[in-house]
Image: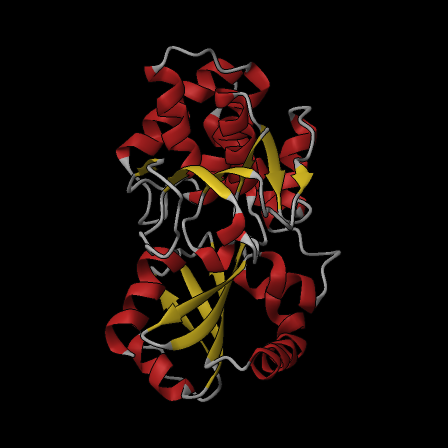
Length: 299
């Protein structure tokens, strides 16, 4: 048996990519934890089952999706039989395999874009409900094509998937953004962990979380407790810093909440000098393309 598995704290792309890749190669979709509210909405809307929870992969055949970073995979990934990778992130290059494997990494805004293209090239039909879910993943990951990670290929595949699923891109996109922004039942802890990843940046360890909202001010009631949660995470895991990116979809920018060893330096890197530990950075939408590269070049 082969499992298609994405990264920790899976977002919609990670889970739908696992389902789509599993369908393409006859595998079983898996995830390391339960879907977040947005992803669960997508699964329910299109009648798809949540993937099998898989936290240990020793001895198992694994096709990795939406990551190639061992830190984002189960702790025993080095004991798994990795048979392939499909991803849209930078190559970390620390995974070891017993032999040659299939690797596809493309500079697109979403892993589902890559998989959709592979369906097309192999002339494999995409079921209508899967097409709808993949469309939602693309719209979510590219923030409806506003993110600098978005490419022409993302738009093309979204249009193709919309035709198959008989959906209006703007309508379903706004529906996704509304669900993404619903934090009425969230806690500061769940918000921090909704989409958080750890990175080794020039020998320094950072946890960087991101939440996307239609109105950034929605986060204000959570800020005090969020900072407390971030400080506890930094201390507990002995990190050099925790950064929370609050993306305001309508304003096309993000507020940075910082708990680092040098908040002033981090603020200055993003031209975000303020009296407190948060600041709005116009145009900042992507952790992958606009935060990690800046930290890597300057720390």
